Length: 111
Image (cartoon, rainbow, N blue to C red; front, side, top):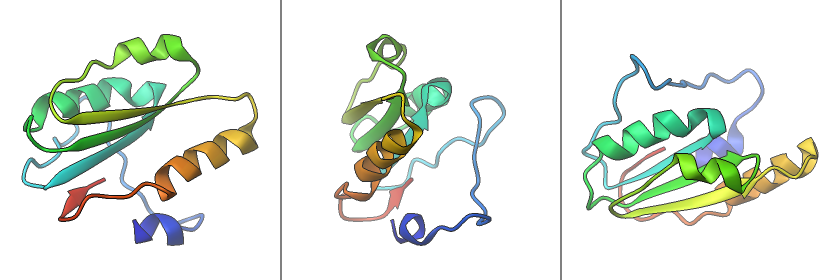
């Protein structure tokens, strides 16, 4: 979580798409998957590949309730749906607050 608090414009961040990307390793104690509506297929693919007993949190930033239907979950998954407000500043604050105020489980995790 420290990397998110200290990240600056120009810092490198690896982003993976749903097709041809590496699959999330399944040996972590917990997972946090984050994305907007364009990431839902990739997030869904990751959820299908992870062990059902591992805790997974998802932060999904979408336009409205209609977008929520594209992500079905099973297992130990908690999804936080964030809906766009129409203001880039408020949306950024909403997203940042949801991420930075989140209490992460103990142990080694994958974000």
